[in-house]
Image 1 (tube, one colour):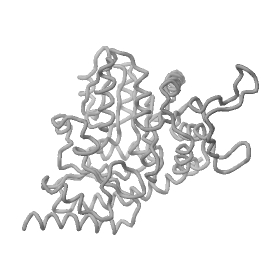
Image 2 (image 1 turned 30 degrees about the vertical axis):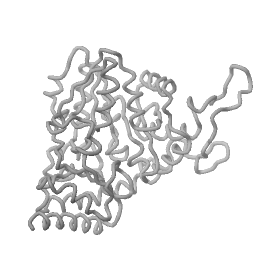
Image 3 (image 1 turned 90 degrees about the vertical axis):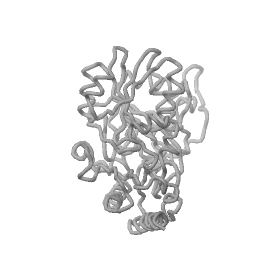
Image 4 (image 1 turned 90 degrees about the horizontal axis):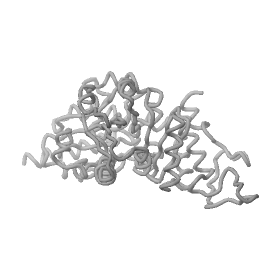
Length: 385
């Protein structure tokens, strides 16, 4: 079955009781038990819900995993995955990870005894230098947030297995439509379902999938024990969003390629980060392991002082956190999504104050280009006057 078909018909795509082509929203907290101590497939909706189960079956199938777990947010999914580690364990992670991931490690897990080292995870030499006897996992984003770094996932997973480490990949920017990390050797794949999977900026969700039965048992335990599960309404919305993922991702990346080239040739723009550009340092790696380059772009203005004026001058593109919706969203990582990372650490990783992250939507690309151009030209004119 082709992936675009699998997005629509994969997992539990219809109601087994009635044949409804949309799995119903099972808005219930508990289930009748016919005999004492002998519950059926479901007993309490924190532990399992038919609508959530349909979503989890779909994601597991799309990612090539044995089991998926749906959570109330991406960070709730990351929290459950990190909970499988013990005090004294050490992780290696990329130096430009999402600010919420950094905050969770630094403020929640570090005080509990979990340590980490941030490196440029594209470089195996840096991974080797960070390795300790206590290292248990390699945590990657590819493409990374916000610098669009591309990690060779297959090589990284081989390196991790050589050292007895788990490989965890946040696949939010790529989605399973463009990249399937478990098939490249990863052990756990994470998503903020809020983003491209939902696709309409109307829900918050997180997903964790594994191809390892032992890990699945552990993650499932923490999903139930911590309790940050995804409710049935959002599970239904997310499954509905996934049905159009293929057509949306094709539209996102078609627009993104045009916008990336436009920005690359604009006199007010200093640098563009987009893996679809031939000059991107990991363009060939992205072409090898992805079926497209996605809809995310980062870029720097020549004049840092004009960043606020620029993003506030946009009329079609919305200044807001998040990404992956049908509408284009723009943000400044140093002030918004990555503000929780100390300034010195941000800048060392390349997240400068003049860096802007753009989630390219599926609007008419001419309107997006015109909007960017008028905001850029307004600021060039203002700066020169």
